[in-house]
Image (cartoon, rainbow over all chains, first blue to last red; front, side, top):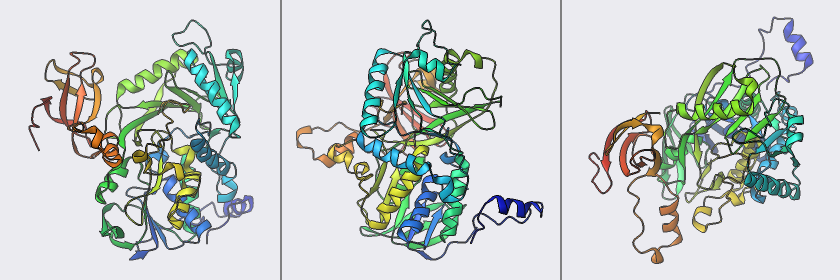
Amino acid sequence: MNNKYSIFSLIKNAFTQHENWQQAWGNPEPKNEYDAVIVGGGGHGLATAYYLGKKHNMKNIAVLEKGWIGGGNTGRNTTIIRSNYLWDASAGLYDHALKIWENLSQELNYNVMFSQRGVMNLAHNLQDVRDLKRRTHANRLNGIDAVWLNTEEVKQYCPIINTSQNIRYPVLGGTLQKRAGTARHDAVAWGYARGADEMGVDIIQNCEVKGIKRNGDAIEGIETSKGFIKTKKVGVVAAGHSSVIANMAGLKLPLESKPLQALVSEPVKPIIDTVVMSNAVHAYVSQSDKGELVIGAGTDAYVSYTQRGSHDVVEGTLKAILELYPIFSRMKMLRQWGGIVDICPDASPIISKTSIKGLYFNCGWGTGGFKATPGSGDLFAHTIANDEPHKLNAAFNINRFVSGDLVDEHGAAAVAH
Amino acid sequence: MFIINCPYCGERDQSEFTAGGEAHIERPKQPTELSDDEWAEFLFMRKNIKGVQFERWNHAHGCRKWFNVVRDTTNDKIHAVYKMGEKPPID
């Protein structure tokens, strides 16, 4: 049992120079058999394991991670959280997550540094204005806070934006979701890992899945780099590598994996206290608590697993950033990195059963999965435990690509997917 | 970012090209007789290979011609380039 983190545990540990803090999660060797195995120890996978233990009383669970927990896209995203999606299904899914975010630090007894600093989405042309206004109406009908701001109000909310009407893509207005914001991405993985560990979940790092053993249409177990593990239920949350795992099981998914880039600047004093996203010019920026500007760039247009990304993509984003924020013109960029995102044709995720009994996939989050972490874990745990989707993720089944009932958020979401 | 050897123009920067996705997906010959599953397979399902993949590229900012590329998606190394309609030079 882990110690509860509190002001008292902090004081107590201060007396021993903080050398006696308990390990937040264990480092077990895999057992021979589990009731369920989660493939992928990122935020979504760890959250799934946590909710399986907490809400569905499944304690004999393992999370397998081929690297270290949170070392994939959980640690590579730009930490933006919002729920202002157009369609009802997406709004339901992402707002479910946002509601969990609002109480997550307390629930996990782990500070995920959730900060509701607001997310503003800019409009740069007449079509943007129409689309974004339509989206604010749709959001409000779904009980999601959203307001339309004109150019002056945008300037008021974020004074460093260049609202001159003489730039190539002038700011014609924007939408604001005040409940939206950011969280510390590593802390989300660590908090869920600690929570899952407390439920008795085995978190097994440096353990790569090599094969999936089937008996007809049912799962028998999985081959890993640490030996064979018997299980009847496998939940795959492998992000960019979902297709690789699917191929092992003889399944094909409607996914393409592409590098998505982000970069951070040198740290500076507080200059931007919100998140500003711009779909049309593809630039989004916020400031981390360390003071770095966190900038999201686009995806490469081709399939690649290189975790690098092309230079011209970064260049394009920085051009847009500089036009919108001339004040950043002499900032130095410190680090740049790429993560492999799995993109669905309709840019909406898959949280679903498959044609193989006991095999579940949670994938296709594309460029925007971080914001959904708690909701995704909760709904995926429900789907695995009951062998039936929750009503909030029923629309995100894999069969929608056969039936044609797509959740087409392409371009309708607030930023280009 | 890498260099692509366009079969018509020679070596150019990748940013001059548009990726067209997986190659050799044949358009159904009898579309009216296709089941929903077969349509889904044709339209949406992709191999998304981690490793050597066959794909289509278009030299959008050059000759604007389509051609095929064999590329390793783990390191973006190109193994072969061949024209549309030609057989892949390697398996």
